Image (cartoon, rainbow, N blue to C red; front, side):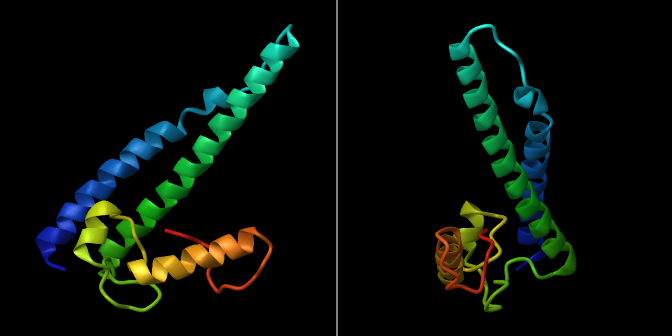
Length: 128
């Protein structure tokens, strides 16, 4: 990967990091409020659950972005963490925080799905 490509991805990742960090500050949506009406209680609980899921998703993605920025710093960005092959530029343009080539990502996803369903048939637990 050229230095200019590396700088380009670093800028994209830093912008995504700033965006996700701003969303992570939205903890007000998780506060627990008592409502006089049972229907309002259910609605508040549903909105709170949605806010928690969104925060969880954003924090996982923020971790992946920070990991990608560390790989830029150590010079391993663009190399698959599983097979050490180059990650295609097309994939990196679509998912700049990708840690795996497409083939290995499919293995990671299958392993994560198997683990989630209770079957421990894979050697990876985290998807990128």
